Amino acid sequence: MWKLELHLGRKLVWLECNLHTGELLLRHLIVDLDSATDMDINPNFTRIFVGPPLIRLHDKIIQDLSTDQHYGYRIVCAVRDGVLPAMLALLEIRPVNHSHWLTTGNRLLRLWVSKHKLKGKNHLKNLQFIEEFIIGVYYPCWFNVKVKHSSQEIDLCIQ
Image (cartoon, rainbow, N blue to C red; front, side):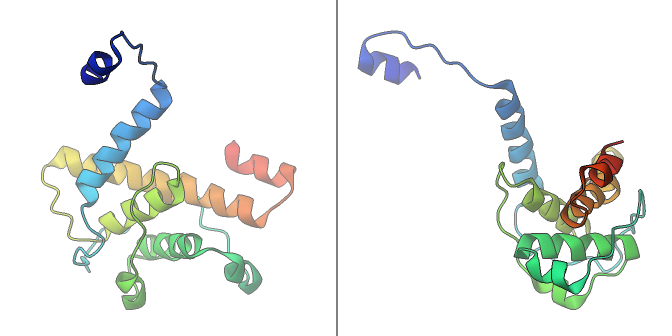
């Protein structure tokens, strides 16, 4: 910014949005943790079974899902069951994008089932806390909204 001020010959004021600043920090953290989609799968990942089960999706709804949505549904089922299907392990996920929280959730779940090389009790505990939120709150609520279009039914996932 200093160079830009020199070039323009005047002072500039920088206003930033605190929400976006926080999202950028989270994005950089995730990029650092994630590094690549092609991490080796850990067949002995810890199963996470918290919160309400995912709503069962009918074939018509599954056909309407985007690739990211379909992957999200299948990876949540896999982490809850403790078994990652081989076909799911081969799928690639889009890069982290701070405006696509569904993709971010997918990448974090992929990190959980991979040989992520996280060391230390606190790092694993923090990652597990994030994963439990995704498995127990974020995705069940997301798919309930996808299936149940009534505002009365949607309110149930917010309570």
